[in-house]
View 1 (spheres, rainbow, N blue to C red):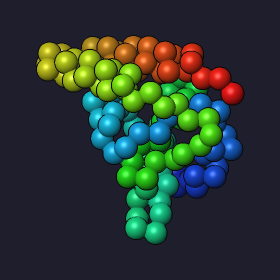
View 2: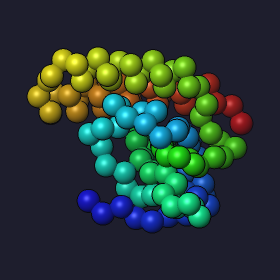
View 3: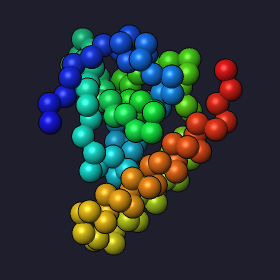
View 4: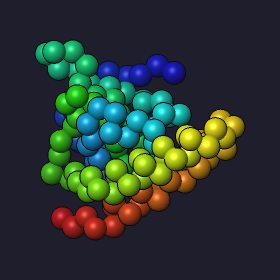
Length: 117
């Protein structure tokens, strides 16, 4: 799959819900997924973008920031730990993908609920 190069401004303009996380903060949850785009900065690569359940996930050294950001890192850490436990089970790839997809959907839906603008 080819990743598109995008500007942060373009990403902000096209997504309402934005989850911004540091590099490897969701490593296990996103391991079996491919980012659709990335952004750069003067120093090089900035972040990758994933779209899941209507949420733009920006993960990297300098992830996207926005006034519409979802910011509950305790929930992200909780679900990342659950995904790590799935990895420890040594399940077949399809089953692991399915379980992590369900976890990710549950996490994103719980993060979207408390947002008030």
